[in-house]
Image (cartoon, rainbow, N blue to C red; front, side, top):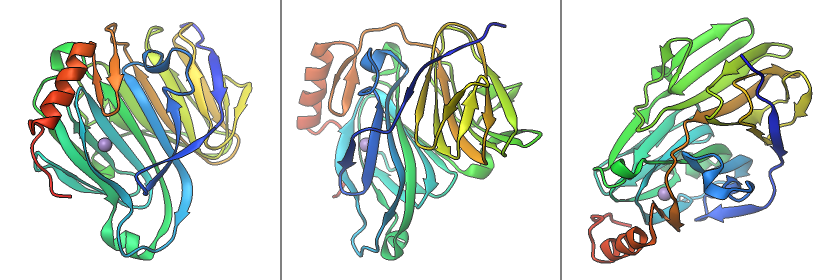
Length: 290
Ligand code: MN
């Protein structure tokens, strides 16, 4: 076992809206020197830090839009999110739930605050990740995996509870099926408790402090809403909570393939991007009512 060090601690910088319902800080790719390649297969991370949305009769969100070439993974921490796609997939996720949509060959979807929740308003906090697909799976059929909180596998130790969404921890396997090796967890850690991880050195690895504050490897102090990029210089690292905390942890084997990205499409070549626009414009992504 060799120690994996911290490469960068990144504050939540500029803010932008996705539609009118997602008020997000982007960490991947905009805050990383190698852009989408640095955390590949995690090619995008938008984080809606805790924000109070007032009551609205019309649910806020983002209207019908396409995706091709990757998966969108939404992790809800506060509030309720609804989703509909052109494949008939859809559902509502609330606190602690995850929706895992494989756009692959092409899908249309819309994402918005759940109607009844929206009427009352409240605190809203979520993460959206884009998980890249290997070239051989980019044109696979679309699919949808709802992952309710009680379906996640749990690993408990003194003052710690790990929810395994995808991948595994000490032999416990999460419910999500993935196309390349990925570990995705939420960790709840009580003040002064410690937890450690070990991933192969080449796995791109990062954490987001969703609540509280932590020490990484006993020295780097990181507050709420900060993103921690781990170096690829070792396998193991530890976190210790300096107050009751919640973390999102992601680690995955890099896909060593070129990335050609534009807007909602992430492919391997420019030609495939042009094809995606053509196919979208000629209705090959199906139909979804606005
Ligand atoms: Mn989307």
